[in-house]
Image (cartoon, rainbow, N blue to C red):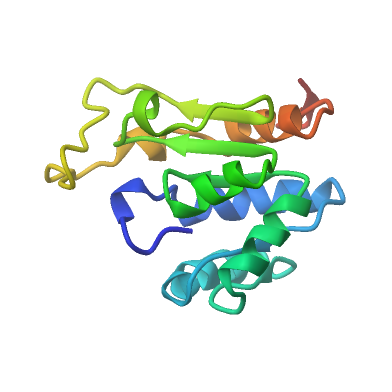
Length: 164
């Protein structure tokens, strides 16, 4: 979920909505991350109780194993993004303030979600400018991400009640 860099984090409400939709389609949803991600994971689980929260419970090697077996991994620009890419997991990568031309690990099973707002990318050598809106990620909708999840899972997307 992204406790270290809140400016790179997709809103908790969006993650919860994506989880709800995936669960409605019969998928299992697991949250992975370090112990510091637990408060964010709790925010997702509070909205969608059927999500399995493994934050802070697995060593890196087991996290990689779970990712490798996953039907899809959804994450923002972070260490887990690169871990998922390294193990060849089907990947949906959410970018906002960082530059995907530099950080996105392309692959046959990777999808990039990036709105390209006028103020983005704003990340500059380890610093973010004071950002009061985080529009670059807040405007990435669960519908958009669901479409890309369906693509990496190689099946038709169900978006807002319609097959895309």
